[in-house]
Amino acid sequence: MTISIAARCERTGAFGVAISSSSPAVGSRCPNVRAGIGAVSSQNVTDPSLGPALLDSLQTGLSALDALAAVSATATHPEYRQLTVVDKNGDAAVYSGEKSLGINAEVTAKNVAAAGNMLANPNVIQAMVDSFNNSSDKELADRLIQALEAGVQAGGEAGPVHSAAVLVATDVSWPTTNLRIDWDEDPIAKLRELYKVWAPQAKDYVTRALNPTSAPSYGVPGDE
Image (cartoon, rainbow, N blue to C red; front, top):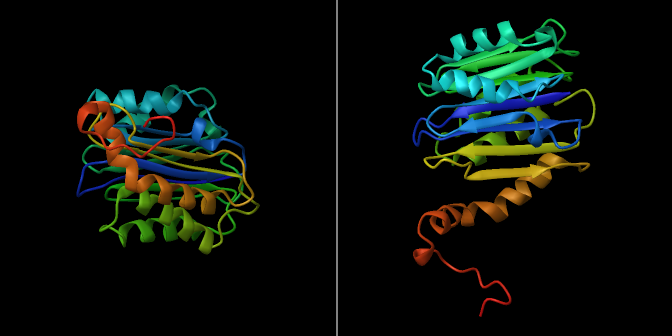
């Protein structure tokens, strides 16, 4: 069982995915982002190879819809896969195979695609998209976590979730936010706590990579 949201920030051009699942370590398998290219999630009965394949297709210039059609047509056992895609123009698409588990739903809008399976009710995904669209003044990672929280408030999944993740690409070649809770009784709440620690430092870690001489120190013991 999984809920996820893939999105593009219209203000900054960043791409991100937030996801939560009953399975352990969902962040290691399902979300994928690439700066300037797009955001995707591969879920349900997951084939982790499909996320990179979707991003590669987007990078050739295909739209979200065309990339989704190309990858789902050549995937093995596509009937078990649920895929979300947002491209560099903010166009979004979702594929839910006929064997998507339990109550499943999908919603797309400009700059956002969300989907879920084994849901408590079909309204969960719309609540996530509504939350995302109503928080455009916030940083993308914050908006995506808030969307997961809104999904839980709307009923969430049919059973408990145990892992959650948020992944964001900005304007450098690596994800600038990559936070995971791999196993916990309340992983979305833990993800929120982790984000509160990370958010004030996120840009400093980009500076450390690009120009260490101007990067701030956080007073780590042993580096006096």
